[in-house]
Length: 415
Image (cartoon, rainbow, N blue to C red; front, side, top):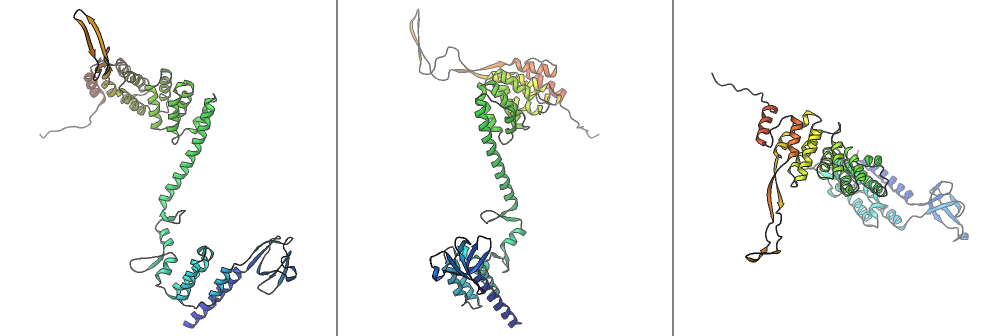
């Protein structure tokens, strides 16, 4: 049995030597598509001339015209001859295979040029010495704590890992996420480029609303919003932006429209409100975002928010439930305003009277807090709930608790 193994190994080694020798021979590619291998020489009579001689492994000799017949000649390099010479002296022992594998690795581009040969040598090392650690690792094995070996690639695949571009092993889910992110970024980049082209055309008066509506989605919403803010000076152009934003069915798009419904000029406010009133829009979400405008420092924004809430919450009873408390809280709000006639810091004022001349010097804060009754909030409450408690916030809250809160709990005392 042992002798049979030796004979088999020796035969395999001889076959490999032959395959490498043939692979390393000169190669001639003919214009007809045929490929010949062997040793290329030049006919002495035609040395440096138009013909070459090719001697094949079988001993056949071809005289080939360089111009009419030969397409390309690939000559065997000296490094291949050196490898063949060394291979002839390799004994079937692990140390000889290790030495020749290392020689291959040290050559210029050796790990690529001799990739198959290096692997073959290390496979023989493992065959002859199964516990050879370096050879195992060169072939991609990993060792477990119990001393057993497994091919790293096979183990990684069984554990759900996949190879990335750098030939590292990463979690399959992670790679899928990265691929999706890359795809998302590519699509977003293409849309950004298309949006820039649309913007240039829009500045020339060619708005193309349908094109912008197609470009505007979750990935480009922020970009379109920023462009809409810049376009407020051009009402028609800004309206096109808002129309595109309203086509995105998301809370972020509703938030943007709510912003315009409270802070923009009247024409744009009305357009934003009309878009928020569409049946496709979640009116309760719109009321929640508009309610944030009731806390703005500028009283004009509070009035705008109250008006917008009244318009949108009147479309269904569900959204009205979200409107009462914030509207009641905004019936009377405090705002900071400049004191009329106050001097700015560092300035002086001279006055003349019966007592002579006096000087007033400005310094420190020249503002005061004032309480403002917001008629728009009261009008919104009256319209939505058909009740009237004036500016009495507590009365509105009590009425809300009585009419809009329920309790199914029953309390039973001990007998």
